[in-house]
Image (cartoon, rainbow, N blue to C red):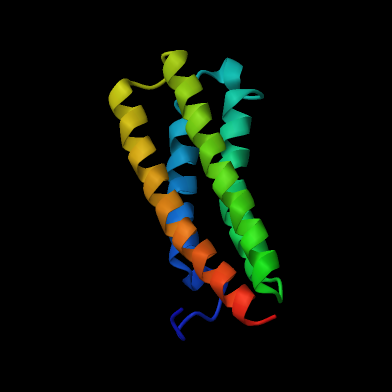
Length: 127
């Protein structure tokens, strides 16, 4: 990893997840108000969970523990994707919007997987 990493805020996976979180928050505002305590709340919480878990994992002293939190973050990315599929099924978003977000989420997952791989490798060499 880069020696320039001084905080979780410097991690590429956190920065990308932050972008997603901001976009999801804006998108959720377009959903019907009857979804305020349903889909809107769920998708916002899931998108926040991604950055929260990356940050919490970074604060751990062990690579394996950090990787565990990053796997939780990855699960939250898939949860956001599922909630977007629900939004599409309920006609809150278009096919094109779903595909755009799906690509962005899969890009987030790819970057996060790279970080997880790094953590697992570091954890296995530092036992």
